[in-house]
Length: 219
Image (cartoon, rainbow, N blue to C red; front, side):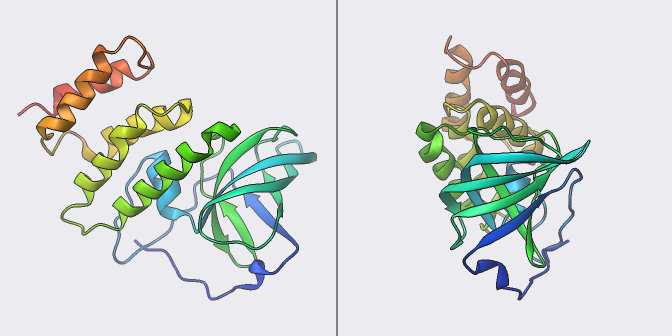
């Protein structure tokens, strides 16, 4: 399965760009990279552009869709020259809120690759956390097939301590999804996960996920 290249570059021009947020998952294909199922990893893997933006205004289009103006606050991955994006999607974004958006080119538009209902809110102090998580996971996805699982695991484990709740939760789900307990943990990885479990400040929603994952990776 692989991502089709698209030579269109008209959407890089200055002005307003329309972004369509799909309510369904858009499959892509890649001759070189196996798609790893998990919301955060998949979103990064399928994205041409990841940005953090502030919702300027929103208007309903139908009972199930809306259109918003996004002010681009920070580009995390990729490149774009516009400062505002018109966004259409199933989620009615609230003016004044900030979100990390994972986008892929499709013709003259950009599409969100995140499933409907999956949002990544971002306060200004979260920007660096998103940047580091996206960059390290993106780099891990570029690793050789024989080492990609291990590179992803090394990228995901630190995200479990991120101050951003959605990143922590999806990193935990992705850690389980990309590995399935089939590859033994290194001693330092197991120690890091055990420290999280013993830390009283660890997100309680992660505890059963991490405990189950540790149990499946025992060797």
